[in-house]
Length: 457
Ligand code: SAH
Ligand code: SF4
Ligand code: F3S
Image (cartoon, rainbow, N blue to C red; front, side):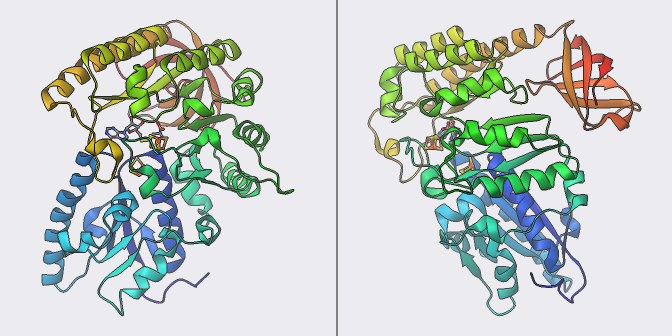
């Protein structure tokens, strides 16, 4: 690793858009720039380098980047006028999808780097001294993760007791609406040793919950030291043995890859949390087929009931798309009835957005915007009702809460239930990183409150 650059310390701000994998990548970008003299800032005014880590999943997400860049351009011009500098970088999935088109659309951009090549950020930044613009959107052969710098103990502590660990990159499913297989490349899993080394480092510096990430995380098939392929369930059981790890979550899963050993891990592994994020997108078999999801609504119902059998306190969240090309009123009603049958703890839902280069973008029978708006509203009303009912069932119960941070009020601390609901309680900050048993006394719209009745070490 290169020593810290001789120039005075510079400041980097990384702004994340999109999914948890981008959040993870943003942190890793900060980590890899640290030995090169960059410290992290959250204040735009102080930043010498601004990296937008972007998302291409829907048109709106993608277009937002260009309006952000417009504002940053103004800042850069002001800086230049007063003799200062501001380097603008675009990373992530828009960088991958649009490549050097970004320089054409926004001339103030200095650097474009894709999600599989951001380990080369230090040399790209250095290269700007010689060349006005730098771009790297390759899918390199070398292992990006091996080139990354582990976070310092201080960084780990500042990021909190719950940490993301990406264990798999890319996706080979090619759902007809989705850009991910193009922006992130084909599916690859990190080795078991790499994952465990990262988890051990995090746990040694106070992390108590690990969220294992991948676009298709339940299809994880990393190799162990003997070269054999290991499933997500087997990886989870190894992560559970790391000293200090109290809770494990994983996301995002595909219903097709909800294998028997993972389902039984829900029965046997108490560190595996019972909130399962399992996107279904639609409840209509016709639409699921057109989406290339390769399962039926009935298959999904079966998977849900198998998980519930394994872990009776399991709860589910999901993703839905309304207004996929060809979606009729009847198809949409099928989605609502699937939602009623399953009963979700929460869900994300989106209007279908046609993405350039994906098969669905050119399908016949694109659904008009007003119908999408109406369907989204109906679906969200139903989900909101279910979320509210689910949260109400917490009232009066004694729940394990992993205390994560200080609250806004004096002596208030905030933690999460096994279902990821935020809980506010009175208690000392020394409980951060520990599990307290909390009796729930109040259920609000977005969080719960309660009193600590016991605590575990
Ligand atoms: N890998 C995950 C999710 C990937 S993207 C999965 O297989 O489900 C996150 C969510 O964005 C998707 O679940 C989907 O609901 C939504 N999404 C993806 N492409 C979209 C598009 N073109 N229009 C609207 N929503 C989309
Ligand atoms: Fe996109 Fe489908 Fe892959 Fe999920 S499984 S990332 S929705 S292509
Ligand atoms: Fe968006 Fe890329 Fe994630 S498109 S959802 S940031 S993988």
